[in-house]
Image (cartoon, rainbow over all chains, first blue to last red; front, side, top):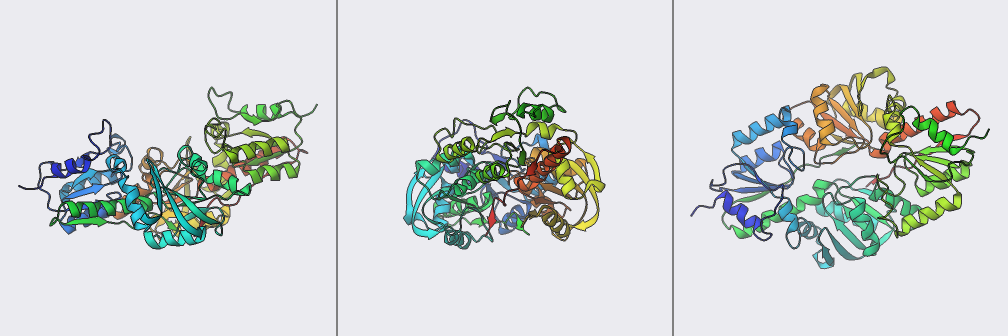
Length: 264
Length: 264
């Protein structure tokens, strides 16, 4: 019996159960088509779509929205030339694209977080999973040393830091994706007695300004901001491993993108 | 007749008229107190408050919220130790703090934008003001050259770029503050036939990913992200100049902060 796209989607959402509202839909493609290969990625850019097609995959699983918005507001970009050309590319390649965001975050543990912790080789230091964060208890290290570890393990060219690079940390909050906002991150410092928070992305005037004030008061606090993609790509790589184990013999690829920003 | 805090506030909001809803309030201080000196800043951090007090100013005008949220959600940080110590510092210094965000953005032109354009020495290239952006038409220059100009004029150590550094630009959209989101920024590329957009801050998965896709399609588009504070500090410096002209003899200071993030 051939493996169909709808079978894969069913398997992916099964551990969570059908959500009432979700952005996770089959954006393109025929659910009854046979799956010849799967590619996973943080966000299906034009290059990622081309690379997936070249590899022979016909199902691409994208964590973030492919038309530049979380809620995939297609009305807003109906006549936009970039979106139009991207739609054309998708149709030409015949690529099916499934958005896998909400469900993956609701796995127990969150698939994105589990992948990040694995890529950082920090499973042994995991103290606790919260729904939107993980608490990591490491042997004492400076902010600078931890930043070096992150850069090396994630293969990223830089990280952004607020705080003193020489500060010694052992208790870390890890928040992947857009979870760096003040309402989520700020109370965690106290609740979990954290020295350091490692964030994907968040508004600059909230948690970063909080840490600036804390440091100016002589408190021992710091944050490292990885970037949204850098914090969530490992979770989509991890998903590729899960799918390989589930479908032996089916080609499954993880496609990484280059860093979004250059620093100059 | 002494100049009172309420007189200064009245002057500041007068060109706009009373807004029905606004975050701009006197956060601390007695409106009837006499003004001995004014300091302006992007966000009143603990260091800024101390520096303002040391200068002899007793009215500090802050563009962003002083408790790490735009809507100044004091309930959320009621028992937070950083907020508590900051309140204590404000009370000890007796500093009056006026939030000046919404009104300044509604000046014609937007005071934040006018200050940014002046600091960039781009008044001569201003093509048009929109309510939330300005269109700048410069003699042809590469993205790399423009980034160099921004760093030099704003005194910032780095900018973040999506796109080709060698791309030649002449038509630029300028969006200060948190106006880099997709709904605001993406349509502007087409409507204004822009090569480059210079943004304060915005979600990474919207406009930056749009530009990544555009570049991968061979289109000539780029963005430079300054950072929220870097894009709005010049507008608060500009405000200090406006107040100096309005109140000759009264000491008026602009207080800059160090860059929020270190890149490592």
